[in-house]
Length: 225
Image (tube, rainbow, N blue to C red; front, side):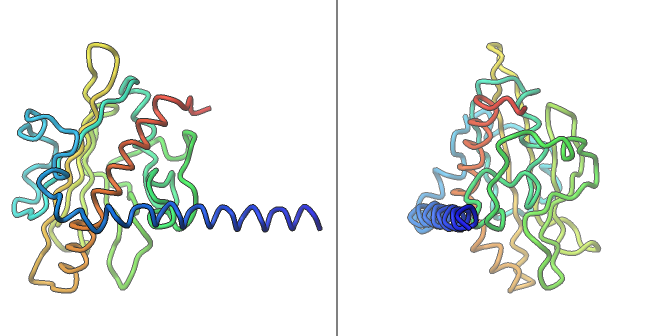
């Protein structure tokens, strides 16, 4: 009985901690549109913003085009596994788990079953809702150098979003992780466009900044055992 009571208390504390963690992001979400010119290239150099990334030509009319980067004190081979297992109810997104992973904590270890990533594998962002596929698919990859995810609202439609990843090894053995998110809001479908607008213009920066830092912390400080 004591053990059961202790678990209930522990579960409640975890839920409260997740809620407080999520609430801490509210000021960032609310101010993100004002900071758009800065956060659309957060951490990135001029060369990284101007440089090409996998899949740049897939969504030519992207109204949202963000290039963000972080330096990680680990080789690409150590960083890659943390990216390979990203996804809802996979390894999570290392962000605000109450929002991004259904209240389940993101992984703090490398999960072997998600490491054999292949073309056409799905990277779920959330569960499917109202017939919309809330998931990216792996379009192409070269481990541990780069990867491209592509999203289609429906299987018979052209992609409306790409998410590309590049891991550049620095001479010191560190990694420059560069990401690029491109989104076409598709105004011809107003409900979908409004959903994407709110998600990207208010929510994306807080999530991706925390995710990149989460990958950095894990690759630098956790051995994956």
